[in-house]
Amino acid sequence: MKRALLVLAGLAAAALGTPARAGAQIPGMPVWNSPKGGLGLTIAADFGWPDSSGGDGTTYAGRVVFGMSALTLSGTVGSRTPEGAGSVTEYGGTAALRLIGGSLMPVSVNLQGGFGSASQSSVTTTRGTLALGFAIDLPTPGVTVEPWIAPGLRLTHVGSETDTQFGVAGGLTIGLGMLGIHAAMYYEKLASGGHTTTLGIGAHLAFRPAFGL
Image (cartoon, rainbow, N blue to C red; front, side, top):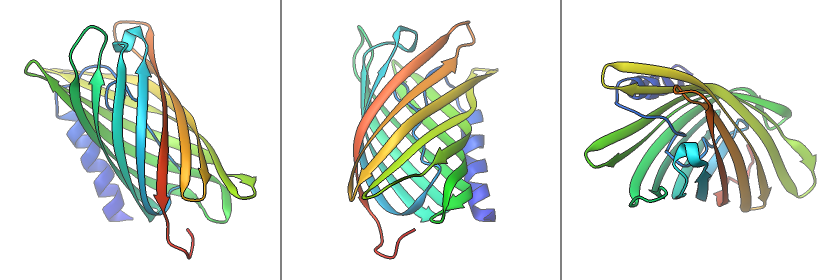
């Protein structure tokens, strides 16, 4: 437990100490979460569409998730093409610690910390996320259905200025054995006023131990 909390603290410190601008965890993509957690390896392909306040365009990313029961680590690498601009390579990662829930409980709660970074024209954009996730594991035979929501803080640091805004992500994860699909909507307030939203969808392949979660 102490080691997991140190991982989350390290992600938060990295987010606070690096220049950033507004956007999702990696710009153009929702902040993905799965409060239920679990054991095993998951490989995902994600697609994101931000609104005009988020730069429009499309984002494509590959994500690897490693579940160790209560602790879940993930890494993301992708490419974003904002409207009227060239493509940008992005990367990021998260650490999530399940606080409540497990195989016998239908309700799960986790604490998530994450970062995302991209560079273009010598300008580095890095995002920080601190969120509390809530999920329900719906009892559907042969199919796993996890609706979730994760409100929290989005940290932005540019030069000597740091800005903190409220953001919330919510989505649905559906598993059919090893295969699954997922979708999420992301909302964030902007320091300049107004807000930005991002829609994301994707598919994943999960490799889980036979003895369960």
